[in-house]
Amino acid sequence: MTESLPVFDLVIAGAAASGLALAAALKQALGEGIAVAVIDPAPPRDASRPPLRTVAIAEGPRRLLETVGAWDAIEPKAQAIVKMTIMDGGVHDAVRLPHLGFEATESGPLAHMAFNDDVVAALSELCRALGVVTIAGAVAGFRPAARVADIGLADGRSVRARLAVAADGARSKLRTLAEIPAYGWDYDQSGIVATIAHEYDHEGEARQHFLPAGPFAILPLPGRRSSIVWNERRADARALLALDPDDFLRQLALRFTPTLGEIALASRVEAFPFRFQVARRFVGDRLALVGDAAHVVHPIAGQGLNLGLRDVAALAETVVAAMRLGLDPGAAGGLEAYQRARRFDAAASGMGMDLMNRLFSNDIGPLRFVRDLGLRLVDRAPWLKERFIIEAGGAGGEAPRLLRGVGL
Image 1 (cartoon, one colour):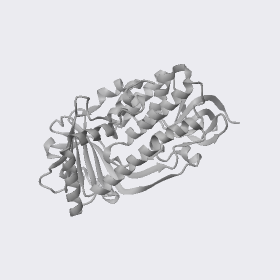
Image 2 (spheres, helix red, strand yellow):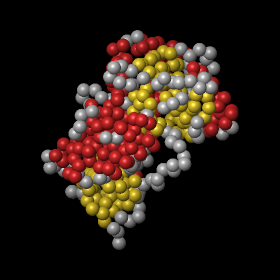
Image 3 (cartoon, helix red, strand yellow):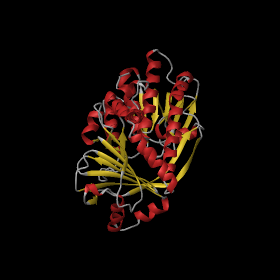
Image 4 (spheres, one colour):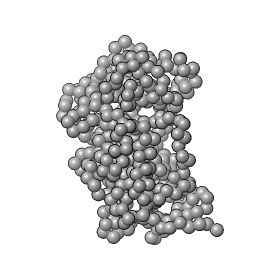
């Protein structure tokens, strides 16, 4: 006999940043007027393993985190990016000339770098304080009906929701159970990720060096540390990770900027395969998709988390508006409005990053000349650079309220 749990207004599958941010935004806006649960399939994080994966938080998502009450816990552990330099060339180039640069304006930094674990921990603590219910378990079934959806758990329990939200990652179980296909392709690239200690201060500067195998990003962290995202073909990434530490460090030094002085590994090294993927639909019967469950993009511009938080802002605004009017948060009309607001933007952003990766991840002479000319032309057009900053920040005038720092 299965145990049945209470009916919630929303049940969110997945306890990563996007799912927790949505739960916090809804509880912060509606308080006791909404019942929200998060299904968390993951065991507690091993505190003995220092965090590794980092996220770039653009201005709009930062405002969302600030508005819902999480930013005060994240900011002391984050590093502001006040300058970004983009270069193009080869591993053995003696001189690396910057082709395009961005600098912070009076409105604030270009973005903030933080460890993903720190963002999740801050949001998790906020959700506890706001009264979000956490259900330990894994989704095993999904059955939508006229008024509620039944979500089955692997241990035999079930939970019912007026709206279910899939925030359970690229291999979303809830999306699969709802029979929503996802289309995309794998890249023959992996991202090697590590934290690097260096001799000199980075002064808040991020660097992206486009190399033939893919971009090599140096992203500033607090102190004299930076995170690297080193794109290589998958076979080459495996070979690099098989090297002994001294040989790996020599390969790293060939690509790392010399302006930061002597370098050393300050963490373990891991590699993650890259993929582009977008769901055929972002909604289903009593179901909405957010974050990686809806779209997975190449990390060339660091927009993965930011696109997920844009989903959160749009869906939260839709749900809050419906519930304040006494309407059903899982009704088809509201879900379609969310899909219209997000699917084109997510797909277009993903395709744009795919195109940029293909344009720069090669060493074809004529193509390299054209792309470098394009970067320099953009660098000499202040109005265009400002437009890029606004678009990347996601906080423009037509953005959802939370991305503009306006409460719901």
